[in-house]
Length: 343
Image (cartoon, rainbow, N blue to C red; front, side, top):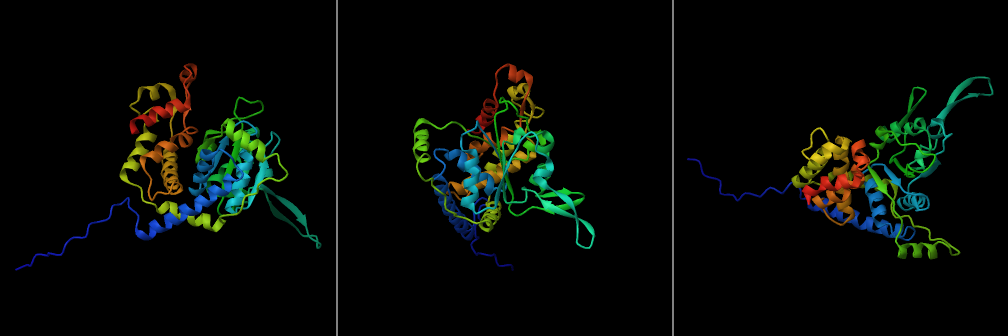
């Protein structure tokens, strides 16, 4: 006779609950990021959302496009991130006469003392850990496209040879609004390579007063280094290990897929959109939600993270049609309608 097993069953842990060791690592990273925030806050005033979205982008291992009028500290923010995170950073001022070789590098013909000739590759400024592409939309489309391979594959090809970029590698590009003179819209393929489009708005009166007083004295505040590039790479790996609950996964899928005019059930989207976000938007939301949860001191993401990140992740991956522009519809209004079912 078979004796029934009376040993009590051990309940299986939920898939969206991290282990004790993983939870401790997430909490330690969250505390470290609090120090990073504080260090950045000594230089950048009143741009908490912009700073947080920039940090989320770097934690997720992506690139960011910062859009705003001149004078809103976009360049200063990128420099400060490089200082605080211990990254080797370089800056390229994009202009209409900038050529791809000015960014990627080029091969030059050299002759030795014995008369032997050979080509030597001279690395361009893209060979760094944090590349600040200042006013990227002032360069020609050819030069803008030179960054495509570097942003996606973290390498460049020159004269048939591949050259790996340093690790980690980020591009934080600043851009002036397209209605300003002398600008070229970025190609859709390159826009999709940016994890987020971060809109930098004017500061409020109190913040502007603080900026005016703090930056016109004898000495400016310099940020302290809080993390290193190696620690940032470890943070990338940790972010990818954070479990995501089924409700968050379904919310991401519902949000992204409802923005596609050929598959959505929302009549306004069918009417106003030329095209919607692709699968890269879902991947970006998944990673960014994990990073935002850690930044906010939580062990796993929630639907609130999806809603908070919908605008910066989707706004550059969708296009309004002529009918929408004629009706005065904005991209933010469209994304608000996509988010409404998740509220």
